[in-house]
Image (cartoon, rainbow, N blue to C red; front, side):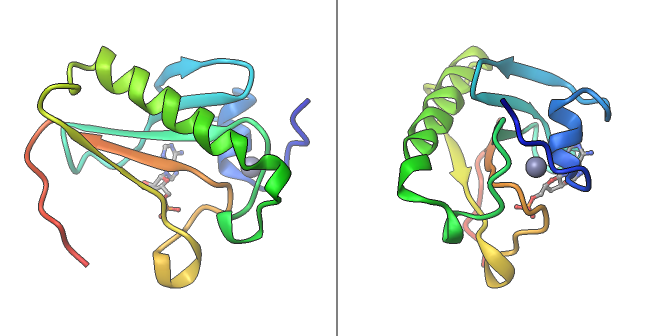
Length: 117
Ligand code: AMP
Ligand code: ZN
């Protein structure tokens, strides 16, 4: 089902070839811990399908983004963040600061966050 890209770090995590702290998994989306320990909760919401960027994603794949947000909402609630709040961020392309070319949403929370850019 997943046309795994052999040089993609997130495809390797999804395939279990690189260890991760997996918080959620369904048929289309996984959520695992970011290696960065910058905020108390930093998770990555990632589709199982290898899609390099929102900028080049097809309209046919667009419903996946809703599924990613739904998974983020579910895991955020499980982590006790629903009342205090949290942040979802998607970095797109070079100016957006996207380092891994497999689309993902950062789920950040556990303390008040500043807006920096
Ligand atoms: P971005 O800059 O939006 O592409 O985010 C990529 C994220 O992937 C960064 O926050 C990295 O810390 C994270 N990352 C890179 N390698 C790993 C890994 N092996 N396990 C978990 N997170 C990773
Ligand atoms: Zn990938």
